[in-house]
Image (cartoon, rainbow, N blue to C red):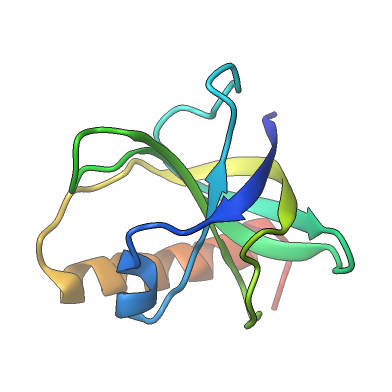
Length: 123
């Protein structure tokens, strides 16, 4: 099982454009990251609570292959910039898929949310 702790920083804005904003985590170069994929996870943050989420780990396929870890919190809205998040990975849902079709990516995200809810025991 992987546990990550990182500060939320500005990303590329792709998730927000698709309607699924993510919290991009700045992790030290020495951090051990989960293999590339989409994962169901639990997220804690200072002043917040234990939230269900989805973690995307891998590299930015759109740019120069920089490492990335970003979290989408289920049923949550707000601004997390600057917050430190603690992420506990539960299980891998799927591999990362490169697509240039926004509708296809949105469909994948919707499937991830359904699967993540099942894995995390949410209705």
